[in-house]
Amino acid sequence: MKTLCDGKKSLRGSVAVAAISSALLLAACGGTSVSSDNGLSDSEDIHSSSSSPKVESSSSVILSGDSLEESSSALSSSSWSSEGTIESSSSSEKEPSSSSSVELNCSALLEGETGWSWNVPKECRFNPDIAYGTMIDSRDGQTYKTVKIGDQTWMAENLNFDPGQGGSGDTKYDWSWCYNDEPKNCAVAGRLYSWAAAIDSVKLATDADNPQDCGYGKECGLALRGTTILVQGICPEGWHLPTRAEWNTLFTAVGEESTAGKFLKSQTGWYNRGNGTDAYGFSALPAGSRKVDGDNVEFLNDGGYAGFWSASQLAANVAYRMYLSYGSDYATLSYDHPNNGFSVRCLKDL
Image 1 (spheres, one colour):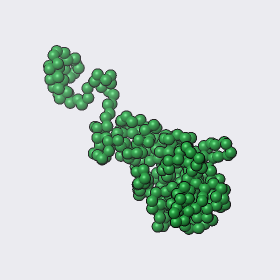
Image 2 (cartoon, helix red, strand yellow; image 1 turned 120 degrees about the vertical axis):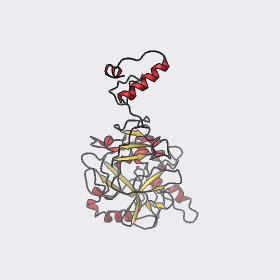
Image 3 (tube, one colour; image 1 turned 60 degrees about the horizontal axis):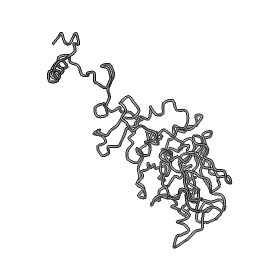
Image 4 (cartoon, helix red, strand yellow; image 1 turned 180 degrees about the vertical axis):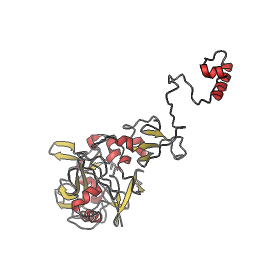
């Protein structure tokens, strides 16, 4: 047996003899790996998701369910080693409820990042030091992180509800879009909505008790110029589109308008060192916008800009939206054309 160990002699003979001899050789030599017919040498590591240990990291997050499916175009569905970016947890004891969940090593995904990438999952953009809550949108089953800031509870990510008006019929100003019309981008930063879609002008117009003719070119008055009347809009039940006054309340809770942008922006993803501290967990992403200028339509400013609709109008053809930029610590409330597309953050009803 010693001769076999020292000389690494080949084993020949019948299948039964070879199997028995191999077992005896392995036990006597104390070895734990052998060459296989997959072409790997003895010196190469062979990793499998069922046997390799989990890599614990404060920057690792669990991705499962719809988020995994939506991110499949950016992430490989195959299992990576514990030294790689993703490790399958289909057989993990930590995630027995789902065979499609994976653990993301966000440090690896973000390494060397200097700006925005649509290939980084949204889970890697949250502040790992914040204890987020969650809510489920009963309309489509999507789960959102939430965060309490002051007396307000906000969605900590952009709304991604598709109202089902994605490009057909005559109500084109009620549409919503994924950035660059790429469905996978909605899984990262939510949808961009026209103001009419954000306030759900169709629902307002058909309200039996108090119908409102809102949307482009209409001064509906329901959320006009600072009123505190709640407009659910495109948000789930129990949540609403924030008014201009409610955005101002958020700015006050995190300091003031001149520094609010720094505290509300995510810690990664913003160009030219424009990242924020995300001190309160709002985790604003630079999702860009969709601009309409006559017949010219373009998506622009991903990585540099975030815009969020309010429920408040300034006049018939302009509505308020909150604005964040990579080049400023300000959080600005200004107004924009209702046909343009911006993100939506929903605020929980009190």
